[in-house]
Image 1 (cartoon, rainbow over the protein chains, first blue to last red):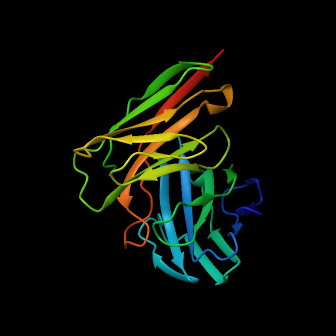
Image 2 (spheres, rainbow over the protein chains, first blue to last red):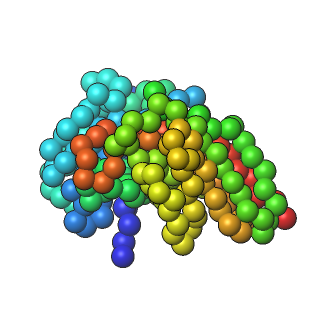
Image 3 (spheres, rainbow over the protein chains, first blue to last red):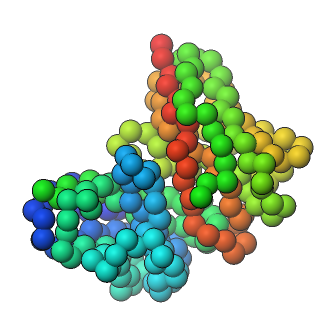
Length: 113
Length: 113
């Protein structure tokens, strides 16, 4: 039974470049979440979707960040243009219902030089 | 902001029980207590959740006080692989409308041989 799959696992890029992070949730899960983890701020929710529709994006730091979910099995988080302060580990999670246990991917470690 | 208070760190000898406390004095009647853990370089992993009765699964036991203002996660026979950051989270339960997970600082559990 495949879990949440994120790609790439590691991304190193230069400031100003566009970065796209990808997530495949567990099949049948209606909710998808994007989190960011840094040493300073811990784990923070960025945005979550229900049935492919964004429900709460209040955690998205600024307009440089955008997230989409074109279908039930795929979501992207895009940063354009990227900045060094965006360096963090980005996690995707999915759940069957909003308050059912969330299942997390292994994350994407992003470094912006 | 997190609704829970946990010790910053704890130590446990391998093979002994690890008892991780959590205070949630402002918990409301329909809120559940969830526990997740994060092993280094991995995504958070769901452990257990409960409302007011004690719960047990293959990973751990959850003991909730009668007034529901605190709880304890018990790992009955800790192993080195249980070394992780443990998060106690209060939120609405399965089937209830509610927000996504809000992670605090958690407790860093170090299991040593």
